[in-house]
Length: 262
Image 1 (cartoon, one colour):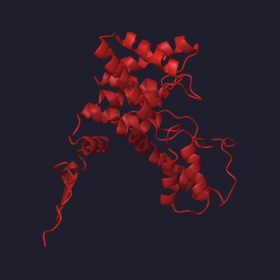
Image 2: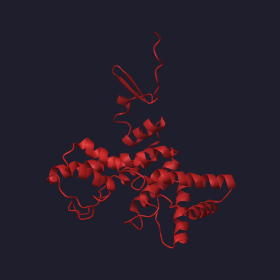
Image 3: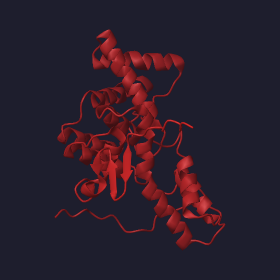
Image 4: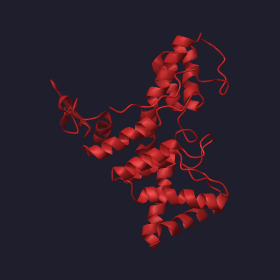
């Protein structure tokens, strides 16, 4: 009897005493390639430049946590308070990352790509393409993803990411498009809707030619350590089954401190 054809994967090859990630031995990658570079490798198939690795590193740090109020954090700590194990609480937190929380990166990428296509197809300037796009969105009463924040009037993470992208030679057309959207949105709605960290990451993932389908994975990978920290704090600091109010909390950790460079 003929055996069924084997299905294929191009990601990892496993042999006795050998593990190859996209063709590279994992023991050769260890200690020589950063985790962000390894993420790029496993997702895109090739090792990135050092500069791209640095930018992805900054992107992952940028969204590592945002306090105890985000829905993913609240979901995770409520599940942890029930006595569920870490993997269950973590899964609950991840499942709360969706359209309205953490999910704006993919939508924003798609919108930036639409603007880029308008610019190329119609031979528009960046400003003309953005104006056309915003006009269409106003007609359809749609909201542009990746702009505005409930707390920050100028997202410090966006500023730093764009600064790094410029210094590393990665900032290009999509960063320009995002900044133009921010400028024209303010004129359109009469108030500033700053590029938030989701919008910044979206622009940079476009610069790095990642597909939008992978966009929200970057938020999930970034936020995982923060969720783990909140879950562990819940286990070790509070009694089970407590009432967790979404806004009635305060920070009591270390005071602000500056990073000392060596």
